[in-house]
Image 1 (cartoon, chains in turn brown, purple):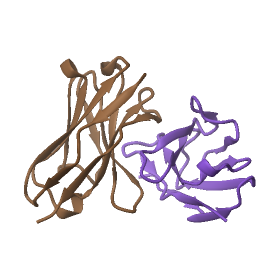
Image 2: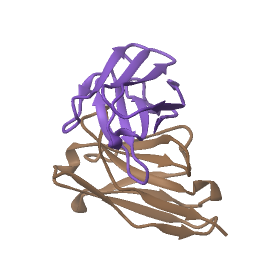
Image 3: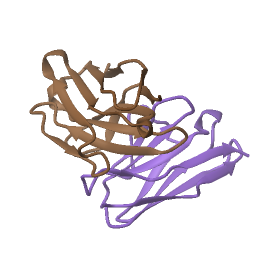
Length: 119
Length: 108
């Protein structure tokens, strides 16, 4: 069974750093891209970026370029989303999602990680 | 960037009735269009990909149609568990992948 299990909810202050994780299981992790999707409270879905799990090549949405970094550790089948300086506007639910194949639809979703940024 | 637009924002339908949700793209996305369902408090779930192919385990009452810039998701006979928010997403012109703003399907 394909699963993406994300790390737990986080509370941080503005300016702090954070890394959240997404562990894949039940499939050959390096063969599939991972995207990250943001959902702000009461709002819709926003694609942030994707990473090729085989070589760590990434693409970012212009809206998120330079503010977040995607990475993977193939040895533990885990993808990461990282911020170096959080803002209050980063408060949201973040989902990691697997692409069914290259440049394709998003077939399996993690359960989401709620990030709250508040002073 | 390809802008995706959905209509209506909210759709009120009675259980057992048919619902049609629309999605438009600002430029052609060929058939590279997916639909997702999000129930309250849950992660989204893939329903339809390639504009018209049901994902594994999706009931036959869900169907998708369209190509180019106009797409429709139809639910033939609404069940209680179908009342949720539905998003379309294009994966033809990327980056970025883009989602519609969502249609909330509510019980009439």
